[in-house]
Structure formats: structure tokens, C-alpha cells
Length: 324
Image (cartoon, rainbow, N blue to C red; front, side, top):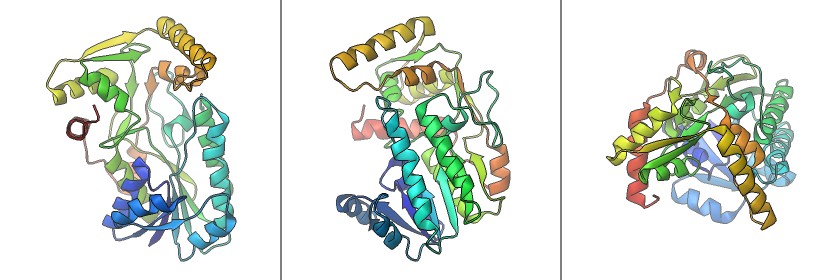
């Protein structure tokens, strides 16, 4: 199967291409710049250069394509509108172009953020209501709605990963760095739980959404099998680094005013801040958890990398590559 992969030069996108190839499919990376194409081509991935707002380049890129995995997205917390510009508009443009092609299946990579956190720690299910609490989550919900509206034209699937980790990841890198320096501050306290998935397991599940039979428009949560206390995650990092990590829970009443003060100072100085009011709200939620039992049964897929092995592997890679 020829599969067009958007966001192919990103952390997850590269692994999706590798997983597709390993299962006998032909990934074709949709990239904006020729320079990005060169890097992927060195890894043996064929590329098609274009832009979401260029209808002609999209049509050309969709020639002889059987399916799309739309993993491109992004945005900056300092500018909430950017989440909708990067997650909603390109999805709409891609679906419009695909409707004029012979493409049969469309897989959207969404996020646990679309469903929102769990108030009491009960994991979110595939059919749970969507209750996002951030502009990022809201943009993912809007992208999912576009996909659901296109069910009459294609077979649709949606994948909602929780936090994805593994070698080369930059989003969780600050926590790995903090643990390497022997202390880990946890906003909101130490009773937090979260779901995680290794990037290779996530990519394998995404490939199965292209191959399996399921009702059109089904959404799938994926995880490594169970929610984890944040303290377990830190302990595993300490074991990998072979030293004790001091875990410091920062209560919300202290973290929120300090974070807001930092955000205000950044705005005053004209600097971009990664800590914004919406990000503070996300960080203080105690439970970001989902469960994939239904997904595993429907897709005939199971996560293969347990958290202890995945964290050890990731810590080792960061150390070897000098990222810490």
C-alpha cells in the first residue's frame, strides 16, 4: 500500500515511515522543503514536496496514493491561534484534496488532549466524551470533527496517543534532564498519574489502523498497557542513571502564581514563554490517563515495550548523544 505520511520529518512521523516499511507498505513523506526531503531520502524514504495551502502540489502528491496518515501538526502555546492554523486548517485542506483523488483510507493522529484529563483518575476510553481544556486540545477536537464529516468519502480512523517518549524525543526531554541532575520538580504534587507509550509501539498501532477492519470513524487510544504514577517514571529514570533522584512536588497554590509571574515577565520582555495560562492548567491536572484494551482487541495490536525497558533505553540514548 502506498501511504502518504504528513509530518514525516517529525519524531513520530519518522517512526511511522519505518513501521510502514517494516510491514511491506510504501511510505511517501509529504514535506514542505527540499532540504527536509534530502534528510528523509538518506534514510531511504521517498518524498513528495508540497504545501497544504497549495492545492496543485497536494493533488500531485496524492497521485497513486491509497491511504494518508496525517501526523503533521503543531502550534505555540504563546499564540493559541497557531494550534488551529497548524492542526485544523491543514486537515481541512488535505481532506479537500483527497476527495479529488483515489485515496481510500485516512488516519488522523489526534491526542489524549482532545479528550482531556480524567478528574478522578479513571482512564479515558475510546468512546469517552471529548472535554479538552486547552487550545491545543480544542484544535484536535475540531480536526477530528472534520474527519468525521468526511466519512462518506473515505474510511476514517483516529489515533489519540498520550505522552509519546523514546530516543530523539524533545517534549519529555526536560524531565529526563531534571532527573539526570538528580531532582525532578512535579507541578501539582506527587499523586499524579499519566499514560505513556513508546514511539515504536505508537507507530506500530498506527500501521494497524491502516490494515484492520473497524467501523468507519473509530477513534483509538493507545498506551503501554496501564497508567503510571509519576513517581514510578522518575524512579525508573533514577535506576537508568544509577543515582537517586529527589522528587519535589510543587503544590498548585505555589506553582500557579510563580508560573503566571514568569509568564507575565516574559511578555513584558517580549520573550516567548513555554509556560502559558493554558499550559499551567494542563500541568496542574492530576490525571492524564487513557486505556487501550478496546484498541488492542479491535486492531489485533499489543504494546511491546514496557515502561522500565523503554525508559532505560531512552536514558541511555540521551546520554550517548550528549542531550543531557
